Image 1 (tube, rainbow, N blue to C red):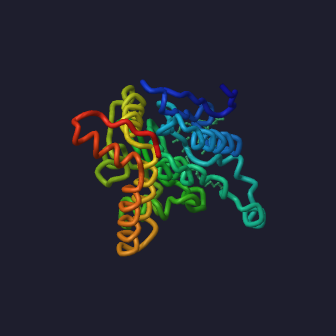
Image 2 (tube, protein in one colour; image 1 turned 90 degrees about the vertical axis):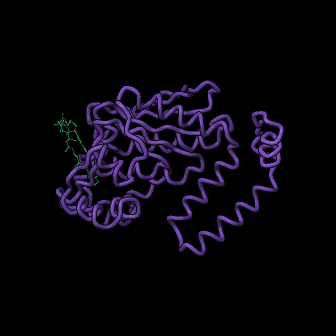
Image 3 (cartoon, rainbow, N blue to C red; image 1 turned 120 degrees about the vertical axis):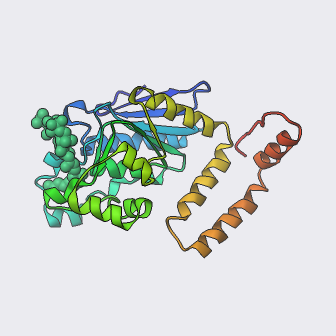
Length: 261
Ligand code: CO8
């Protein structure tokens, strides 16, 4: 209900539990200017706190998810300003959000746009989507995960190829290398992403949050530490009302009624 300048927000799904945030700066192919990133962070924080929201979908337009950081806005940056202003530090709200975020990518996801998609938990792509890290052509390098998240997801050779050439990969290749989990006709993309959010939303929000944190731990630590973390989380679920309910509902052959406790 807020009036945004660079994004649009709506709550949808049969149970009104999926939030959709649409990047809406069509003239600049959704280039991620400061104003846009501020609005995105504000919306994410609000949905993060909203108990009625189970999942968030982040999308752009048919032509561009986001064509990168705003090159024109960044043009005057100096090294000392970047250091002292902690440049790009406030881009990471997406990665800090505890609820699942699904990126629905149609068109270009380049530079900061590709990095933004990679901060989300699941990427669905329209079959015309294109992913790339073209920073190298501007004489800079990725700054929000393009050399780190991409490498962990697609492996060193493909990440190195993308970051050093700046070449884009298409949706089919992105699926093949594991960057996206599904390729969908562009006009169905948002519908499918919302359905995915709704499916996740049928489960306990509480347990979903633990599960998301456990999967993300695989990116942060050694296998042994990660397995310990997972085991303790698994143990912890048995202390919840939702786990008792989920198991009881299975035995009684009825749908579970989760209360997120
Ligand atoms: N930043 C600012 N404006 C942009 C951006 C961007 N990233 N991308 C597109 N635009 C603008 C264009 O300037 C153009 O504006 P105008 O009409 O006023 O000239 C409008 O969007 C439409 O773009 P095009 O006319 O170029 O559209 P095309 O369909 O011909 O091409 C492309 C689409 C291929 C996506 C093309 O726009 C493109 O290559 N964009 C830039 C992609 C890119 O390099 N992204 C990575 C950015 S780098 C980054 O994310 C982090 C590092 C930034 C460091 C900057 C250091 C100074």
